Length: 278
Image 1: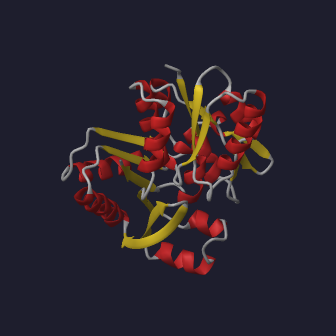
Image 2: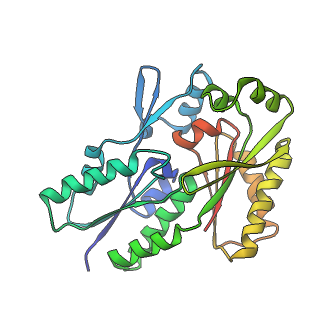
C-alpha cells in the first residue's frame, strides 16, 4: 500500500502537538506589517497579536507560492492537499499550479488538491480527519471521496469582541462600527462555503458566549457530532468558558482548543472566538 502525505496551509490553525501527532505537512502563509514580511510560522501567536495591536494598519496576508507547495509534494508518497476556501485566499490556486508543475515532471504521481470551502479550525478538523483515515489504511481515492463528502454543508460560528479591525480594513463604516462597539454589541458570524456572514448579535461578552453555545446545541440536535474544536484570538479564558458551557449539554469524543493564526486572527481581532463541530 502506498504511503499518503497530508498537506495543509497554515490557516488551518492546528497546534504543533496535533501537527506532529498526525505528521501533517504545513505550508505557511505570509503575513506582513508594513515592510516587515514573515512566514506565519516565524511568528509566535503572542508576537503576532502584539504586533497587530501596535499597528495602525491591518497586517496583510498572502498565500504561499507554488514553489512552497511543490516542496511539500516531494517524495514517493501520494499527496492530498487541503486548503483554506478558495474564496478567502489564493492558496488553493497556488497548490493547483504546484500540482500541474509537479505532474509535468512526475506524471505518475498522485496529487489531489481539495478546496475545503472553509478555514481555521473547521479546515483543521478536515485535515485531521484526512490524516486519521490515512493512518487507518484508507486508500488515496477513499480519503479524497470522504473529505469531499464531509465538507459539504460544513459551517461554523464565531463571535467578534470588537469591530476595530473591520473598521481598520474599511469593511465596516467607521461611525457605525464605533457605535456598535460603544453599545458593547458582539457580532455573531457564520462561516461556510467560503463566506463570512453576520447572523446575530449579543450584548456583552457573556451573552455572545451563550449564543455560540446555543448554535452548537442546535447543531447537535441535527447530528451526533463527535469532535468539538474552539479557536480563540488571544483569549484562552473565554474559550475555556465556551467549552465548559457546551459540555454541560453535550458529549464529545474529542475536545480541542487552539489559538487563531494570522488569517482569521487578523479579522477576528483580539477577543474573537470560533467554534466548530465535526
